[in-house]
Length: 213
Image (cartoon, rainbow, N blue to C red; front, side, top):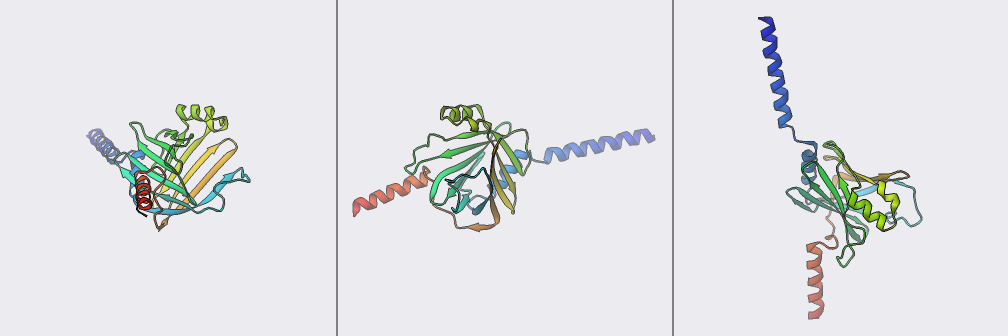
């Protein structure tokens, strides 16, 4: 009788654990949910690692702002503004196996930069607060074509601690870049990034105004 009771108890514990696991979202889904909850908000950032430093660092002394600007099912677009430079947008997409991070780089006229849409798929399941993205084959071919073979080992990462901080990281042998954004203090959202539909609409409005003058 005692053995039978133990068996039933073990089965109940197993069913409870399985039910709890079924209710818990996958790390990728939990991560995307946390990111989407920031939609519409912008946050100021600061460089916490940038090695090796160079004399012509594009980030040095510039105001850094991320804007969780566009959120649709399975995709979040986060422009990263560096001073007046609105060329960068992080694109995070849910895939069948995890997440994908791509870097959409544009010129001021909205045309794609020669180095754009590089990135990769998440490595393993990751966690609800950190996802890593090694360079994919398409990105490796792109940087090799542009003579940037050192970048073939790039591993980008995003850390997201809800209501605390958002961190973007780029790492490879001999290179580490991290920028941290304070999620406790939203700032005024910046203008739309270059190449976005809103930016193109602004350009058309300005052109129309100039003609009317």
